[in-house]
Length: 298
Image (cartoon, rainbow, N blue to C red):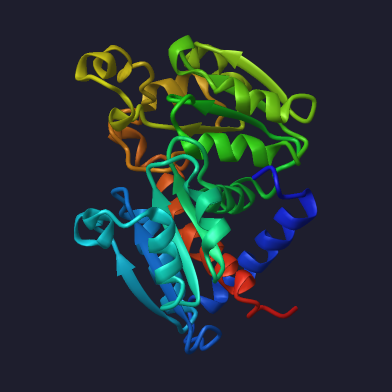
């Protein structure tokens, strides 16, 4: 996300705005084009969102959703896999457990490559849908005070989001225990560009926040169950916390899946935006696909 300027982000968001209406109609914008959907880590929302976005644009999809059935299982290198798939499709959307996968893929792909999540490092298309959702929920991004809560160390969504927010006039609270605080590399990347306040108490800081972006503690990033159990219940947001400590119009977002960091008693509150947030993934990814394929003309 450090590659994008404010102008570029706002332009992508403006195209995503157009996709809200286009998604409701029959489009042939991507007619004859094929998306290679390659997911080497478990995914439901991101994979289906990419594939639905391509279908909404009138294109087609070919899928690799299980690495155990791909040639990687036979020992094929990652680079060879990308080079091969490039001959079958017009654009690739991929998720991979290695944090450097996006850079490696970009070097060898013969077609546009879209990062659908790379290790614990970044998740740029999630950030685009998050920014789009924030604009819908709060009618702006500038001027907001935003809380990022939960597993900020391993959560690639918050790494990308904080990097993108450096382009806007916002204040960001990073709310996590020391063991799960934001990576120093990410903080260094945005230093001097956005005000970041690191705290550990969610309830105490709720009154300051216009929006709270909660993340799950990721079991798959811990070496042992014991290590995971020590921190998995670090923060749980429930109705009582919002009613007693939050602003009346505070927006609650979460990239999903939810484990226990947001209680189900929040779901029917007007503050809960996480299920609506998912829908913005279609619009954002439609915009990204159309732009990288050169299909969108203003």
